[in-house]
Every structure is written in structure tokens, then in C-alpha cells.
Amino acid sequence: MPTAHPHPKDLYGGRLTIDPDAIAANWAYLNGKLNGATECAAAIKADAYGTGQEAAGKALFKAGCKTFFVAVPTEALALRKTLPDAVIYALDGLFPGTVEHFIAHNIRPVLGSLPELEEWAAVCKAAGKSLDAALHVDTGIHRLGLSPDEFAVSMRNKGLLGPFTPSLIMSHLACGSTPAHAMNQRQLDQFRDITKPFAHIPKSLANSAGVLMGPNYHFDMVRPGIALYGGQAIETEPNTMKPVAKVEARIMIVRDVPEGDTIGYGARQTAQRPLKNAVVAAGYADGLLRRASSSDAGSGGFGMIGGYKAPILGRISMDMITLDVTDVPEHLLVRGAYVEMLGPNVAAADLAAYAETIDYEYLTSLGRRFERVYGPLT
Image (cartoon, rainbow, N blue to C red; front, side):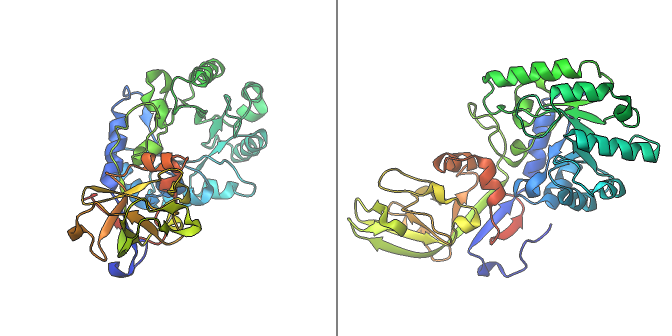
């Protein structure tokens, strides 16, 4: 497995453990919800949501995943080196001046505008064959994608769709994390309507939430992302995915805080009783977001030490976090010992709630300075 930093483990303030087998197991679980005719691809952008593109890609391919979605061309080229036989789509489309790289490395752009479609069709015409690429149609999220009208006109344009036949027509759900939102049904109905005349072209609408929302959203291919990495795809239901990452930070010092004293920058939290605190070597520079800080106005996130909850005290700093370990047994509070700050016992979705964000942000921000270990989350 790849190593992020080739230093002795004792030099690191924290450890990020990633389990590629758990990623593969999550893919297999989602694949089992499909009818056999629908392909389960994988979104592996942003360094596989922070877990490491190379390790995640190899595990997913070994599990049976053959189609991958990244964001930008550089991610696609890196993944091509790892998976020479995979189908790879670049979601951000065709940047100017990049056609030759897509063709040379067999990368498929997801064409999301008329200029991109026109450029790709011209390349296909010059090559005398249709080169594989997806066509993205916007069904209401108003980011990338042809408008429904542009899509309809383009699909009738022999100058565009003569030399080029899309390998996939796709759209993207705006509100999948809340299945009851009316936007989901509107997008589904529109996607069905505008793609109905093109039964010969594979179609894809579902992200992780779409997979879990049932077969109406599955079409020919699904593209799960966050669920593969243990994240909570649907906000209103229990998370059934396996955790794939664990962040641990080392205890630097344990000290007493008298009642009435304040803790951390800004003096935002006051000890309401005599406290014992532990300072651990991780902070917002390591992806443990400052917004999960605690104060007298409200509690923040927490860590876990040997099964005991250790609430954050005061502001999260760049390089350290202070935890309330008053009720943690003394023998667990050893200098250099590890505290779980995210993982099987501290779900990213729970931390995200304290930080008023989503678990995607936590996962993609983690561990630039941590020792990185690949294996079970023991």
C-alpha cells in the first residue's frame, strides 16, 4: 500500500488508518441493491474522498468495479496509471487544450456544455469514429450540464451527433440526501422524459443517495461516492455503511484546570468544575474543523479514549485540541497514547453536525500531517 510520509511513526502527532477492504465491502453492499442489469460504478474524486485514490481504486477494481468517476483530468491520469483497464470518466469535462490527453490515455470527458460537445464532435469527425464520452444534462441543479432545450436540440443535430454518439447520458440529483424532497421526483421525471427517445444509450442519475432511494433512480449505471467511504448518504435514515477511516491524535499533556478558569483561544469556555484536560496533537490544519469547537454557549465535538467520551474544550487550534478527560480513568491518560477523533466510535456525520457541515468535508480534509496506515480499523 502507498505511504503518505516515510518517517518513523513516533514522529507523527496523529495517525490516519484507512481500510480499503471496507471501501470494497461498501461497494459490494450497494451493488447488491441493483437488479443485475445496472452497473455500479464508483466516484473516486478528491483522492477517493480523502482515503487515497490508488489504494481505494485497486480495492474497488478487485471487488468488481470497472467504471470510475473523477473530477479533473489530473485525477483521471493518475487513476489510469493505477488501473490501466478501467473505464474512467472526468466529471469536470473537457478543459480547453486537453483533448489529446483524453484520447492518449483513454479518458472519457463528461461533456457539460455546447462548446465542449462541439469540440468533441469535431475531434470525432476528424478521427472518423465516435470517441467515448458522456453527455451531461442539467435537470435542475444548475451547475454543469446542457439545459433540457440544449440537450434536445443537440440530440437532433446531425453535425454533432453524426460523428459522436454518447457512451452515457447522465444527470445529478440536487436533494438526494433528503429523499422526501419534491426536487428528486421532478428531476427523475424530467430525466426520464428527455432521455426516453434514446433507449440505445446508457443512462445514469443516481449518486449514493439515489442508489438507496430504489430502482426508479438506478437506470443503467449508478455512481455512488460518499457511501463507499462510510459517509451518511441519506440524512433521515441510519447509516448502514462500514466506516473506512479512523483518525487518532496523540496525547501531549494532561493537566488540571481550576473551576472558573477559561480554556483556549478567545477564553470562550469556562471550567464549570475542577477539570482535567488532555491536549492532543491535531487541529484544524489536520482537517479537524474549527467549527466543531466548544464554548460556554454550546458543546462541540468529542474524542474517544478507551470507550470513554472526551468532549472538546474551547476552540480547536491549528495544531492541537483540548479534551475534557475528567471522567476518563487515569491509566488511559498516558503521554503519547492515541485518542480517536474520528472513526468507528466518532462518526464523521456526527462531527459534521457539530461543525454545521457535511461528512464529505471532514473526509476530504483529513490527515495531511498524519502517519497514514492502510489496514483494518482495529
